[in-house]
Image (cartoon, rainbow, N blue to C red; front, side):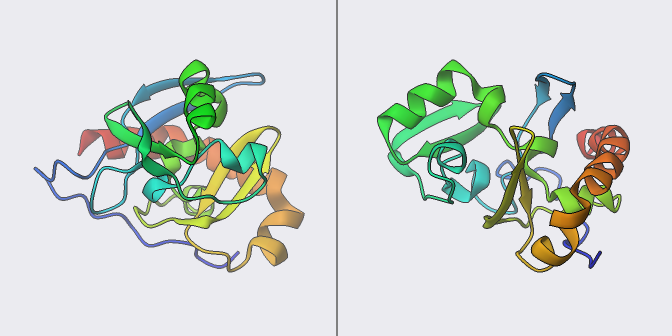
Amino acid sequence: MRRLGSRLVLASGAASLALALMLVTGPASAQVDGAVNTGYFGNLAILGFDPVAYFTESRAVEGSPEHSYDWLGATWQFATAEHREMFVAEPISYAPQYGGFCAGGVALGETSGNIDPEAWRIVDGKLYLFSGPEGLEEDFDPNAAQILAEAEANWPEIAAGVAAH
């Protein structure tokens, strides 16, 4: 699999950079503890894209500041008030796995603050983000189970390292 992201360099004292969303996934649900990857600038989860739209519209949709919600120290934006309310009622159901870090990078043992909101997949009802579309159809899709198993194995150590910064 082609490298999907570069290593995240955390700048100490950069209030706009969130540390990690510690998602410990189980067979039916996820537990949350921590902050959200908002990239290198700003404080928007998924760079302002609507996390609910991935599930309801099967596409990446930009959110609006008019329909925002603060959760885990980040601002989440939604395309509609209805999507906002759906998220507020069940944020774990819509939040991206691995704190919004690139799932391919996590599988490789890396984190990157850079994600492309238009590079995503929903697998077993969970949202996974990627740093770009390269390799998704050729590498990720046919090997999703193996790649996500590697990401699951790597995530606890990565999350602990990110949280330590």
